[in-house]
Image (cartoon, rainbow, N blue to C red; front, side):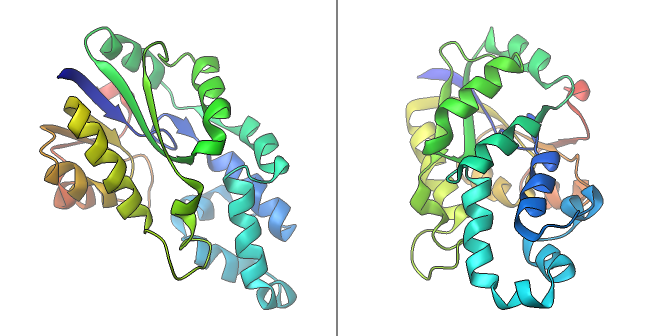
Amino acid sequence: MIVSIVVDIDDTLIDTKRRLHGVWKSLLDTDVTLEDIEMLTLGDIFMRYATSEQKKRMGELRQRFWDLLLCIEERGSELAELDEPIPDAARILRNWSEQAQMVYLTGRPENTRELTLDQLRRFDFPTENAVLSMYLPEDYSRARGNETGPTLVEARARLLKQICGEYQVFRVVDDYPGYFTLYREQGIPERVGLCRSRAYTPESFLESGATRVVKGWHEL
């Protein structure tokens, strides 16, 4: 089997906070602070910033939030231009790609494949011979308020199982501690938590299965 490294994209390689700020601005016509975008859940942001009239339209606005974030609505693709590369990530991945197959595992849906590849190339991440594993649009059914469909964790577990069935994965890097149980269950030896967000602690990664926690790519 081909030796590979699995890496998440959003907020692991690419900083999306400014895009999320734009999504909330388009949705609620107000400025959500970058601190609140980092620290609060989506529901908490909505309840803090939405007007009383907007709260009456919560179901409709939830749908539009995901349409914007998942680039189903054209405005979402425009807001993706606000994304920025995380320092040192591209340099480290280029070095790693000389020794292993790069597998990008992302929660972005398939309809953003070309946009995502264009971003990775523009930010100088290695894409030649790399694998890009993406969610299906229906994987967001529950997040959009429906009662059926997989959870986002179940969607990630499905893709990860496929990857580990095809490649010998020896390292994974992710910024979300909630996925590290999956990485441990698949027996990936090196499980690196990128603890950039103040919403998480190094302990939250380690308790979920990370073998190492860093605050930035320069530590790798």
